[in-house]
Length: 111
Length: 115
Image 1 (cartoon, one colour):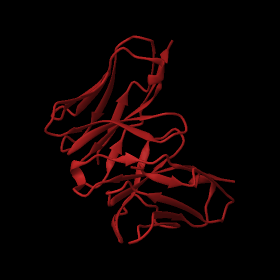
Image 2 (image 1 turned 60 degrees about the vertical axis):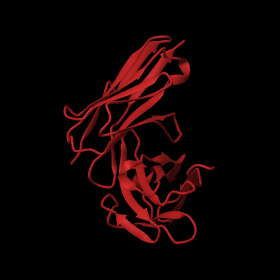
Image 3 (image 1 turned 90 degrees about the horizontal axis):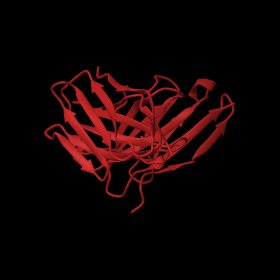
């Protein structure tokens, strides 16, 4: 069974700093990996989807990389802003029908 | 182009009552997934449906929980005789035909409180 781990569980940074969130997974036989953002009491917003054949995806200040063989993905956030404060979730889709989720990294960006 | 619509947003039920949660997928999406998020835990898969078919219900509790996605209308997650431990956020996601090549689009969730 796929296990997804996100480190750190919580992160607090001053505004303007660049930061990296980490995601690791135990089974490298994946179809794709998706990063989400969840605000308190709200739903999940998709940030980036990386197919297994891709190495990275970029959207604005966000860049996600995928190293399937080592079972790792990183989400890079450039020039962080207070509005980036949220929980970031990594989800991995293997050969089954579901995405497996990590428990997330809670990010606080201090003005 | 409305996203995934879930209702109600909040639902309060007394122990022993039934809870019905509704999910309308995005236009053009025919695959629906239900997930549950317990306090301080990650999202756990419950069930995957296509129109009129349950494809994978490996994450559904064996008793009291059922799901359907009829030919017409939204997908329904039904919880019979609710207990305090059912209190959680229930999220629905949808994806287009083509399955694994696509990611999920999530709804805003239904927060169920059992009192």
